[in-house]
Image 1 (cartoon, rainbow, N blue to C red):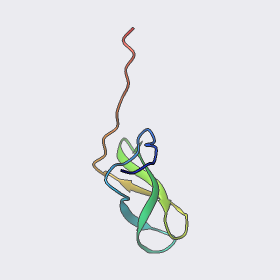
Image 2 (image 1 turned 90 degrees about the vertical axis):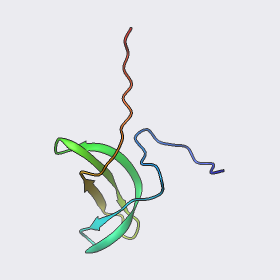
Image 3 (image 1 turned 60 degrees about the vertical axis):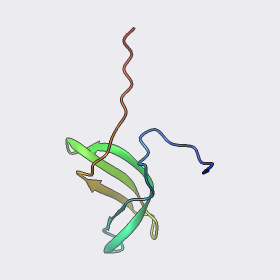
Length: 70
């Protein structure tokens, strides 16, 4: 069993891979979270090699929404 704490908006099933503009190649992404960017779903994180900010636009992410109905 993994003993790490899930962050809100964290992307499940391992680390996603995306294109890093700084490395000019596809890299794994650290600290990946689901966000909305450009009006659609995306994954935001940092490059595991150089630390540059990375985005995967249009990624099939699921974001949990908490609604207060009181």
